[in-house]
Image: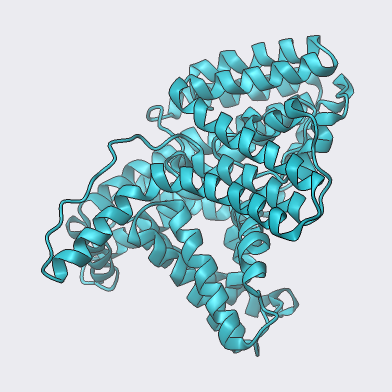
Amino acid sequence: MLFNSPAFAVFLPVMLVVYWSLRGRARQWALLLGSYFFYSVWDVRFTSLLVISTLVDYFCGLSLARTDDPRRRKMLVTLSVVVNLGILASFKYFNFFRDSLATVLAAMGVHAHLPMLDVVLPMGISFYTFQSMSYTIDVYRGMPVERSFLAFATYVTCFPQLVAGPIMRAQDLLPQLNREQRLADADFSMGMFRIFRGLFKKMVIADSLGIFVDMVFHDPGDFSGISCWFALYAYAFQIYMDFSGYCDVAVGAGHMLGLRMSENFNLPYLAASPSEFWHRWHITLSTWLRDYLYIPLGGSRCSRRKTMRNLFITMGLGGLWHGAAWTFVAWGIYHGLLLSVQRLINGGRPGDPSRDPFPLRVLKVFGMFHLTCIGWLLFRAQDWATVQLMLTRLVDFSSTEIRGKRIVLIVLACMFVHVLPAFRGLGERFVRLPGLVQGSLAGMCLWAVILLNPGVKAFIYFQF
């Protein structure tokens, strides 16, 4: 079910009425069944994958709590990782690796007929497999086990964050689910603000920018270098508004259920360094990769060479997590390179750009934004030919023609809003307004969404 669909506009109020009319375990059952319904509206067949991940990690967790045998504990956590990553690899990466292997064999003169899987990528599979698997790893590391299957299943499937995050940790969400929620815990005003802000960001700003972005990336040769630069800027804000808009709706729905979801973004284009960018962009994924991949590899507690290796492995696999294409891997390696260069410049440490004088920080933010945009080129391009053609156009300033002037204005407005302090804390000011004013503003936002939306489109991160 899409957050920006009429179905969700009906589902959420009904879910809230049922949820708050019940108590105790009945309320948890309502949330669990509602979450399964939310997911099954897309394709009921793939709910079986949710059930498999839930059962495997629940029983692995229980078994881990019952044994102190190091060998058995390693076998259990390995089982969880293999099952979850096996599901993810089968549906998302099988054909990608098959095509890559076929290309390598063909280059060697071997023409093999390798099998292909004719499957649809299950919605949200990259998110819920990571969330479920992290629970087993945390139990292995010493976190108390969750003995209630109902609570654990609800943790895995909780609908606000089920499809595209934020990726919640068990120690953050499970205590909330096990605590009897009171209606006073719900913050309907803040929830309404976050939901409507998220829908506006997605349906008005991101979808409008996407029209111009799609045109340019479809045929970069038909656009001037300046237009291609604005297409990159437009995509930077399209993906930010699209994904942060989804997370706004997720956090807002959580507020209405009395649950506090993790924040996923913190003004990422104000980052002054690569490390700061990853502290501000897709925060729950970057911390997941740090805690479950980078640090176990050795993190920065080893030699400089191995630290660089760990960065490249972590970011390369992080890129592959986003999509089954070598352009995504290149995007991850590109950010690994940026992080490595930053450490080399700062003597092996990430550095702290917040201590820089204001003029220097402005220059660093400007530079980091453009480095990020170059990375988005790899992320957005469908193939290497598009990457090459776009790079050629970006250095061609023989024409000053700017197409899509309305999009240019939207991009400039996004940049202005992103840096203007007055636009921060709007939610806190909104909840202090009288109810009639809140309702009027929400109605105006809904009217703008309906009037200005170019058409219902899936969120970008649904494909991941």
